Length: 167
Ligand SMILES: CC(C)(COP(=O)(O)OP(=O)(O)OC[C@H]1O[C@@H](n2cnc3c(N)ncnc32)[C@H](O)[C@@H]1OP(=O)(O)O)[C@@H](O)C(=O)NCCC(=O)NCCS
Image 1: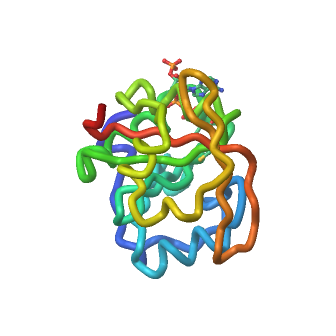
Image 2: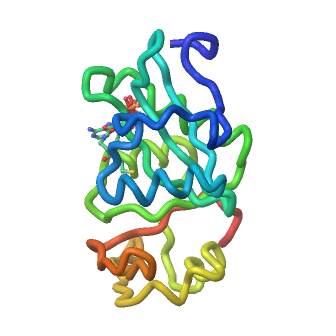
């Protein structure tokens, strides 16, 4: 994989609306609407004309979903997408399922740390903090729940990872 063969940054309206691109664990339509509304930038990995991976970052620097076609996993595609997004948005955070080890390890390679206190979470997410609740101190990090106001769903336990300079 190299830059020429893989990555383009598309503005929302240039992204082909293939459901395959957005096969992220939950709320495909919801994720797609955020991209189409221009509230997120999607990074796409292509093999020829085929989309093999996608990752997006909201304009508030929150990382959204990342997905790689199973046939192309463990080849560095997701890492490449994250690396490219960090060139545009050097400081990012992400709210991940606490059992999503793959994504946690991937982001750790880029210096993302798990938040260790509610104060740290509050500083990173700012306005979103009021949607988070049921905080549990797990020792090395904090888990919590988040109720999505738009989707009215309660997710699984979550963690926050970020690369902000907060002690
Ligand atoms: C998670 C996912 C995006 C990783 O994509 P990928 O292209 O295979 O990842 P990469 O090859 O770039 O891996 C980079 C690093 O991520 C971590 N990683 C990736 N897959 C992993 C796995 N299955 N288990 C543990 N660590 C993993 C490793 O640290 C890896 O580095 P290494 O190869 O030096 O060990 C991919 O498995 C996927 O699409 N999963 C389904 C969707 C999903 O769960 N997305 C995350 C929620 S947003």
